[in-house]
Amino acid sequence: MAQLYRLLTDKKLPSGASPLTRTQHHYVTYANYRLLPLMYWPNGTPCHLVNLWLMEIASTSTGKESAKTNAVLITHFIRFCFTRNISFYEFSDSYFTIFKNDLQNELKVGRSQIPTRARAGSQVLSIQHTCLKFLLWVQQNHPPHDQLPIIGTSIEQPRLTIEWRHTYHNTIYLWHADLAQPTTAINDKFPIPEKHIAKLRTIVYQRYHKAISRETPGKQLSLHIMKTLKYLYSRRMFTINMMTNFGLRPEELQEMPFDENSNIISTLTVCLPTKKTRASNVVRRLKINMGLAISLQSYFDDRAEFVSHITTTSGSTLRTSATLLGKNGFPLNKASLTKEFDRLCDDAGLSDRKVCLSMFRHRFISREVKSELLLRFRKNPELMGELSSSLKESVARTVIAKTGHLRPKSIWTYVDEQYKLLTTPDSHESFQTIKDDLEQTKNTLEDLLFRQKFSSEEQVAGELELLREYIRGLEERLYAAERTAPGS
Image 1 (cartoon, rainbow, N blue to C red):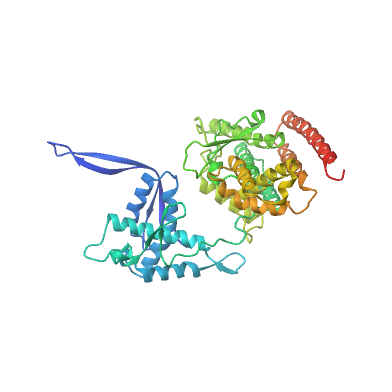
Image 2 (image 1 turned 180 degrees about the vertical axis):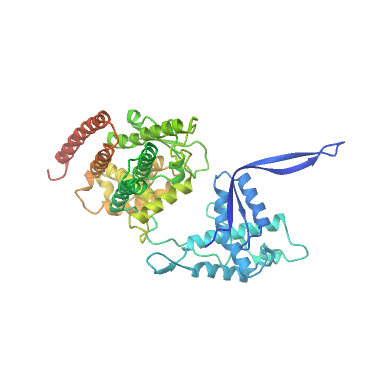
């Protein structure tokens, strides 16, 4: 379905004007917009009321992409009004019911050619809420003349009747009789399977080789192509490694600070930004093992080499603090990051399965919750008898420090699920952390095997020596775990 908005970045627009005394001039004020969507009707005509609403959101919201999110959601309402040839001022309860039914009954056909519902109940609810908020804004700022109110409570006799209700915590929220039920898709918090991650890693290798054969069939590779393809390989593998090990939101990976992370192999610490908390400059510092540090450091070394190459060939210094770069050396934006992941999934044959970046996040949270529960079970086996509210809260508060959630309640679903799994007897669970570290070491060795084609012998030898030392430590941990395991 066609997009009904375009995005403007870093724009300065007039926001107001006031006359200066004793002159014919005016004092003009300006507002800076980092990201401003502009909406238009399906026939290309600008949608002025929606644009004014989005400008207000862009100038007042603390979220970087709040205006864009609202633009995406209000698109359905604009298309609905255009299709039925009605204005915003003619919208009513009956139209709201039809609008909901259209959203719920719309189907989409994927690559499997099997029609499925285009959106879950929670998505329909979000679109409806956005529609109501916009109409409230229109009523307050551009009310109809000599007509019934567009929206309001029953005492006002509006075209669209709403109620203001209170939650258990006395928070006011908007309610309408035809709001959809907030149902979510089945397996909404399903962690990405290990076999899918392995397929994604494999396709990154294959993409590199296909790109070489496509670019220069039977010819000598140019230095620029070699450097660019090497960097793109490294960036894609870095993305998979970061998502697998830290379950980041896409914007957190995109805004990962470069200076604090460029020497990971020495610090063994990853510095990560935290989004969606309505607080600025919230940083997580997570300790990592040597095997993962070697893999991540390889990317930063490749990035430095790529930046040096771009600077040399262009004749100008490339100044950017972005961790992820495009093939032209400019910062990679969030949309490009997610689109590249989608293309990798298609190439890996995963297009007919539900695979998205949020599944890495579910995987990370699930494994962190599992580790915290196992730690507590080893110290106090009696905790396995019942999941108490204090245990749930304790685990959740520990995990949110790593995941970046604002409230422990956001983790409760994961705690419930992992508790059920762990209280089923399984003698192998105590070795989970060691198994994870061994898996990361295997991935690091595979990466080194690939990199030996364009790395010096000294560089590969140094990284292998670090891995040997780390594997010795893993062997000692495995031996100690086997000695203390039940039945040994």
